[in-house]
Length: 358
Image (cartoon, rainbow, N blue to C red; front, side, top):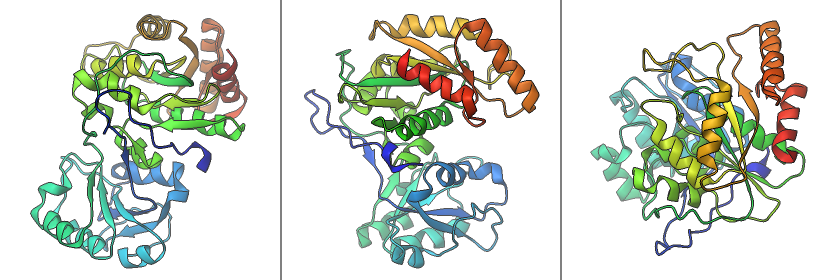
């Protein structure tokens, strides 16, 4: 991913909480894959390889592990010599805890002079042996899912610059990948652009951000304001969406992010292979037009000029022919571009055009 879309450090919000800043991570990384044997548990590592390759010096796989990103193999001492400043846990396990089999390797990284970064549910500092060693060596234990302190309440104040927010008909269907692809394409056109990360993997890819789903609800909109501050008039922020307005469990984070980011443009993300809301049996997915209408109604509370530029679809479960037919059909029905950011091509270029010039 081009360096030009790496986010700048956001200026503190213009509120009494002058100490508010985004979480910033020490770069570059050594990716730790531990003793992982299932590729599905290494999504974070693969995401970093695919979208932040220039920020990764190599990978560290334990003898019992069989999953690899293809990056150069090295231990923490070798990674430190190669310039790494931190080792990032690039795999997850059921329950999100740190197993005993990893402990020696994590301590080895601290002793080599690397900070530790984790996006798992359990916090690094909850493990006494890690905390004691980090304190003694002056190393940092960084839990990405911990939001920054002193986040302000949202103000609704209009901000300079331009913003795109990815939203969805459901959760976990491509909002992060869509935002990354949009930011990359916009930057490749020579336009000033930043990807604004709101989830753990996005933050690791960008090197900074705010874990929106870990923020207390009263401060969600304020966190989004801090995340996408005032910018030059022609500068674009592409904000990674979270949850879905129609999701019975995760609608709250979506609304706070929508109001706080004040998007000029929304891109609706959808997986046509799904027939119901993820994790909530009995709830059907909303329609695309229904999602557009509700999102714009709510978005226009803080940005009266918000518009929808098009639809981003995850067609990974469709054949190429099925995907082409689906995108053509929905584009004609909605009167706007419909594209798969992974398939790319002319359809995705048209979606980017619509974002910038609609």
